[in-house]
Length: 180
Ligand SMILES: [Ca+2]
Image (cartoon, rainbow, N blue to C red):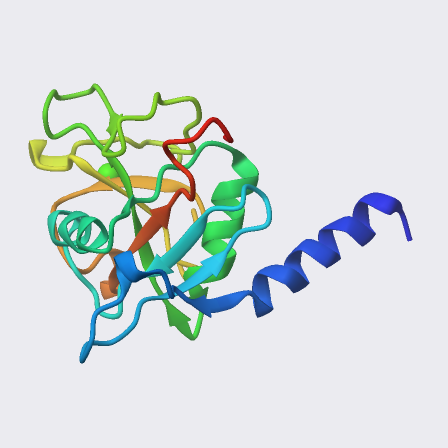
C-alpha cells in the first residue's frame, strides 16, 4: 500500500467520524435544534447541510443565521470532500448548493463569502444560464451523469431527476485571525 493511499484512507475515516455539535455560545440556541457540523481535516473548516431542501437564497439566509456562509470551494479536494460528506448516494441523492452565483452580474460568478474565485468545476455545457434564469450554482447529485461537478440553476428546491437541493454551510474558524 502506498503512502498516498494510506493518507487518503485516514482522511476519509476522520471525515466520517468527525460530526460534532457546535458548542460555542455564539451558535447556541436554547429550545431549537443544534447545528450539527462536520470538521473537514483538509482545511480545518466546519461544514453542515441544511436539514431540508431549500432554494439558494433560503440556503444563504440559513447559513448566515448560523454565522456561516454557503460553502466556498477552493480546491478539487475540498469539492470532493463536500460531495462525499453530504451528497448522499444513488439511493438517497442530494444536489448541494454552494455559495457561487452570478445573480448580480450575468456571467460574472462570485462567492457569497466575498472570497476570490480561484477554482471552478462546472460540468460540460455549464454554466448554461438556461432560459436566462440560472444564476445559482450547485453540485450535481450522485444520480447525475455529472455527479460531483457544478451546474447553474434557478433559485429552487429541487434539481434534475427531482432530486432535492440542500444547502451546504461553511464556517471558517478564526476567520479574523492570521491563521488561514
Ligand atoms: Ca445549467
